[in-house]
Image 1 (cartoon, helix red, strand yellow):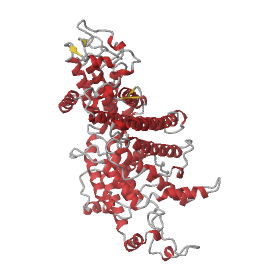
Image 2 (spheres, rainbow, N blue to C red):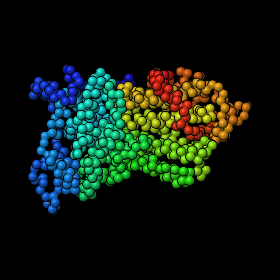
Image 3 (cartoon, rainbow, N blue to C red):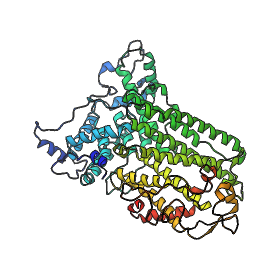
Image 4 (cartoon, rainbow, N blue to C red):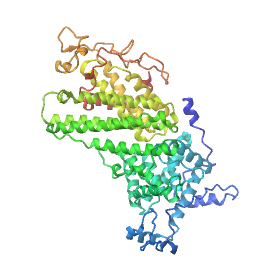
Length: 636
């Protein structure tokens, strides 16, 4: 185990004497434990102060008209004017006066204590706050601020992946069953608390880890949309307008009022909900029910990164605007080649807007004083969004050309104003893919990378698969290997993912398995390429003359021998088990950089086939994925 990760995985605090599977509804066992505990040793949470949004509807003074307001102001739990939604206000009044909510909170607390114990709960909550909360870009928690039971439960669910495997296999399933009963039940509450919304948001970003009985993965997008729908019922989006109004009314050097602080926190939660749902929808063909384009960015002060809170506000708004632009890019369509002019211009406009983001985002890791790691990871989000839209543009172009019935491959005729779109956008996509991997590998904080959202690892996987497909495409079309450092980069990515994986069912380990299957497919293709292969003269003509000068056989310009000993590997062909290079973390060796005969500056090298539709690759890939041969093979 890597020493840094070992240090990060501290030995968990001891659980109770007997950690057993406690049925959520079994109040008898819970009450028995509490009865047998002396008052001196009774572990109890501090009762968190009631949110300012919780209104005592039975207090008549709350229902009296406010001064200078003839109809008064009935404040509902969402913090908005009840007079604008009178029926909802009446429903809230009829439900008031019961202790059901308080009873449920106590039950969650008692069950959580029974499963984990007071110290272990605090340990997991603190770990979540340190490692996971920064990914959501919500404000850091004050030392005297205690999260509510539902929020505490959700945080323990996610952080429980860091417990020892023997403990995790018992505790984690119980925590998620408690969450299923108490947290997700809040989706049916017409006026849920912001803690409940926040808790569901957390559970949408990180899937359960360490449950051997869990056979099906959860749809994070559906869970996030549930949280958004709950926030809409609470009219949380109105907090942006209210926060901006109060900010504009605040005098210089005047401290923030409690009302403004509450409005800002709700506005931030609404931003985070929009960001997470958009992140989980990008590239899936599904539309978020929220709309990042409607966010009011000046509700938050994002002009500084001098504090942790200011840094998170800056990332919160940058991510929102990034997803707005990405969604616009994915909405670009090319229905026929007659619309190529408009299509080309719209794609260029998108790329220019992304250039603006690049200029804003890339200096931040150098300038930021806090949470530098997360500003680096913001670059991965930017690169991934740009990559997804470029792939979308390539597929739109292919579909339009295919409709014309052209006999030539689409990537040969995909030109506009003398620019080959497949070649140009494909080269950019490959550069972005490698950039994503390099950025992710460049930071040494393994403990922080372990806590990345599940979707972050999907971005890494997309980038690696695009690189592997590009390597396959180049070798398939001209018998050469892709120049550069893709082989050692891919190997290091697999090693890093395996290093940071909390368990075999952690998303990092799953992605490493997928990437390994793709890389094995490519290496096995190299092993089978010893026989000379005929290449289409039309295809070779698409490459530069520099690509065709060496190694052309005497049988004609349309023939090239891919020969044994593929270029770029020393001593043996790739995949034979003896890749030369420096020693890797897993005890193996990294393949060396590849410098084939093609000109390094030749732009034709990068996107010249249907790389996403190569049936041979996907057939080999699925076979290797199903085979699941050990990852150790990839490290040799």
